[in-house]
Image (cartoon, rainbow, N blue to C red):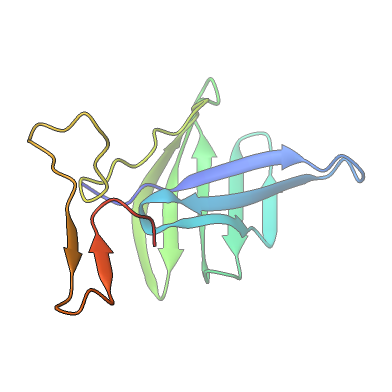
Length: 124
């Protein structure tokens, strides 16, 4: 599976100009500014100086997807951006949520003189 990339295009409420940001939810990158945004009747170009990369492509017939090329760090690859209302959150197995498929026990440990307490249910 590849890395998800989200291009969010909106209109600035003051200038009425279109603006955009990239999200890379799988890498924890959000609201990365697009420094160059060009949208025409049939194409879109969105380059971000922040990440040193960008996308250039053509809209499909009903403008629900853009087929093009992602370029970054001297490399290019084919990419299709599809219109969506919501991006599914990343579910990381190392951050499980209850109920768990295993038995959970709350534990407390003390060092030998009981000056240090360690428990498995306090927040850091």
